[in-house]
Amino acid sequence: MSEQQLFDQLKKLDTEQRNPATLEIDVASAEEIARLINEEDKKVADYVALRNAEIAKAIDLVSQAFSVGGRLLYFGAGTSGRLGVLDAAECPPTFGSNPEQVQGFIAGGEAAMFVAQEGAEDSEELGREEITKQKITSLDVVCGIAASGRTPYVVGLLKEAKEQGIPSLLVTTVSAEQLPFKADITIDVPVGPEVIMGSTRMKSGTAQKMVLNMISTGAMIRQGKVYENVMVDLMLTNKKLVERAKRIILTFADVDYQQAGELLEAADGHVKTALVMGLKDIPKNEAQQLLRKHGGFIRKALEH
Image 1 (tube, rainbow, N blue to C red):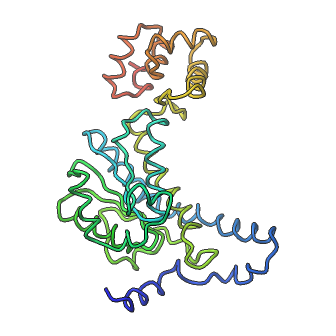
Image 2: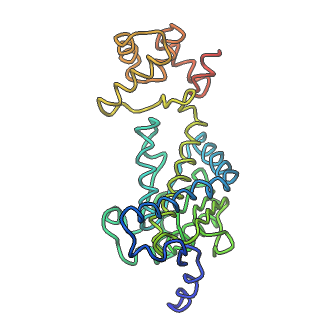
Image 3: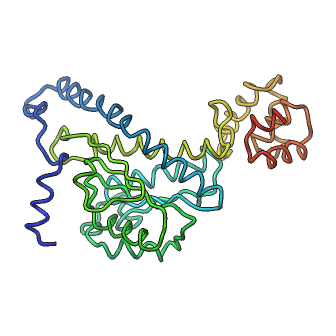
């Protein structure tokens, strides 16, 4: 693609337009700047809500992949790539998941998380190579994240995934009509012109983070990682999380603080096992058997 063609494509994107509400932000007071940004941010959740049906399909697709040992793999460049890495990094401590189950990759590699790597996103071939490099199969789900929907690195990855029969998602913040390539499930959240023209780390970034949170959290819920609305499969990697685990046990089981700690210790730090032990007054091995039988769902184990 020539530089002129790229210029012509970019100038048509919604996110590259000037926002009429912020034309005088350069001379606004600090309070007015805050108000203007906040007013635009308020719109994002409503835009995301318009794509709940597509997000639900993505949740089911990813949950199905998890059920057969597959992975959710995020790919993006710049802000989009960083958001994928962030969402992936937060899954193990939140849901006790294997770090390999949800992973994030950014064009330019680890260094690009902290310092922009110029040109790293401009190659479709680099995106295609990720399929082989990360040993991606049809059991996995790849999720491309691109505000413009046309980042070559992401487009190349999605094209290769399509050719190899690998399930794919695309999270973008321009309308589907402006996309050069679509994934199996395309979640387009057109947020309109940014507060600062082209600064897609703002509304676009907020929308993308919301969607990624919904997909990963939804899929984990479908895997039995939550009881009622409490995360009960957290990984006890620090003292704060150990105390949170005790509080969770206290919330549901008729025990005191010391007994909650004893249950947690008897369950080898596995919160779901400790909860079933406390709620059904059974030993660890029986609680583990019930959880295995019911796919890790506490509610189903308790109803057994």
